[in-house]
Image 1 (tube, rainbow, N blue to C red):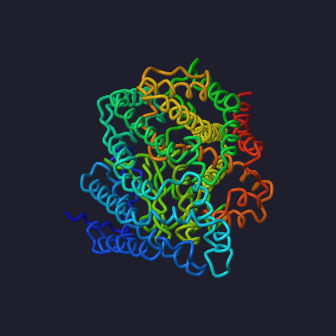
Image 2 (cartoon, rainbow, N blue to C red):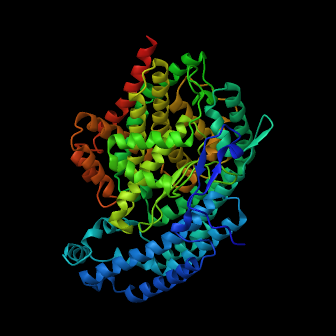
Image 3 (tube, rainbow, N blue to C red):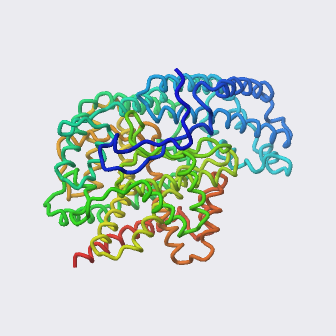
Length: 610
């Protein structure tokens, strides 16, 4: 069956789907910039072209890389880049359609079939990185220093060569490539389709995951508790399945890491992020040491505001008592974020505007839609797309600011070309968190009412705790889970115990944890899709806090340096990108600077109590 072609102005009424007050007309993706339709001749032709181009590339270059002249290597790299764009366009299109409705059988089949065909088509390319890494160092340096050669691509291949110590034989690498569609990718799909199909009974109303999680910020404490208990009930019913997914993925990773002789489960992530393990450890240690000054202190303060001896888990993200319930319509959310961006620099707002005007955002909550939010860069010859589950909460406005930051970053980095545009995860959160900070500061500057200011500050502190403290706790959870899995199969109770250990440590003594909360690890997609990804959020928040402090201290010329950093994409190391701002992430004191901003906000909140 041919699905109707989405129109550039396609929208739907949020009220009919969410049961809330009208948020306005929420935008839906127009994917026709990628392909006109799922059965479009252009899509079929590109798939065939991908198969031909991959085979031709292997025929032309396999066994010859070390003997190419610099000019020939440049041509080789640019052909490889075009193949990357072609495969990326195909998978972006079928992937985005799938995430719009993961429970739709036709979309799931299209996704699975495309993954299989692209994997088969690109199998002949497996030789490329393996053979490239066998090029002698002196030949490599000569090739990448020649004026007519591929010198601008050197950062890409320096990162590739960092994998040399962990490279397997050509035959084993081809096997892992072919096997991926029935390995991690298959378990990822099972997780996505399972979570998208979950329904939660909240006082007789059947809700999806995103709508149920949204209740945890409701003003009505009884509704927050009902939502939390509904989540716990379903997660408890499904915990064996989620335990199997995590056991299998952790074991699969351990097997591959063993064959590659990776020293730790985290090594591959650090290599892909182009960040030194000691930098990540310095971040982790700084945050853990700050738990008592940040989350523990803040949540004791919040318990007093709510008039409670102990917080329950459904109070963690509760609005303050004096905060008036308010839904933010889509038009107001758009204006709020664009005005904040323009206050920093008009160019930033101009880069964000097309997301609203050209069908680059899918905003509403719909049955089967992937939960959460993301900005997908697609390919550098197209543009990014943003997915939201917008329910009109003030935090949803911050999520919009966050994802638009990603989108702007991806647009600016696209000028580097496909191979260099991708930003390591440690820097990928820079523009997104900075966009949030700009929006928050703009709102704070125009808030004169003390109660509103307190609510705004508290909301920001909670967002920062969720970004820094919670994500480092998530990172510790993963580290402990993978270490425990190395000793043998983990029962659901084993994983639950690891989860509760990090929750007690990170949230502190202000909480009383209800029975059932021990299963809340089950729904976190990052553990499944991108092991050890989560520290990137804390990295980005700490980096942005330090950046924003530099901006406040010396605003003149900051915008130009900031845009240069975003345009660089993945072409430069984090140390080079931060140097113009006088910042160094390898210095443990760097992270304390970022954490001190959160501490300062808590100081201000405590002073309001005096």
